[in-house]
Amino acid sequence: MTSLSTGASRKVPATPRLSSIRRANSSPAEFGRPELRWHSVANPLGRAILWLFFAATQLLVVWQNRLRDRAYLQRMPDYLLRDIGIDSVDARQEASKPFWRR
Image (cartoon, rainbow, N blue to C red; front, side):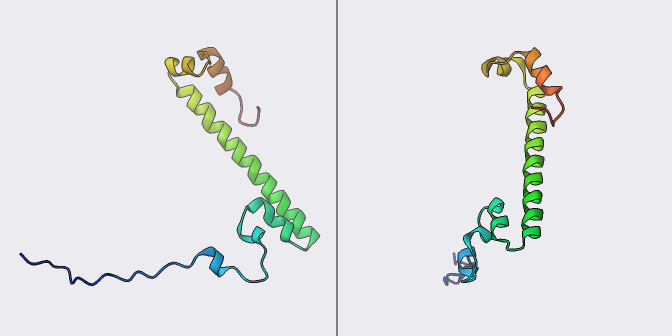
């Protein structure tokens, strides 16, 4: 039986890493954590707008997590609620809260 392979290994080009693309005059905050990007903006108005954008984004993520967690609590069976130390009344009460309330 013969092999269909030619025996030559395929040369796959390596994808360029973000660190190799980085310009010499760029700061690490440009490519790193997004909440630090607004620090590198020199324009005060632009800095304020970016800060507002990232603050609003963080709030939306918190609200989305609350919605998800409360939906999980609502669908969770009683034996799992007992396992985490919550009774079904408390779970229903927490699930009925709007997403913007703690």
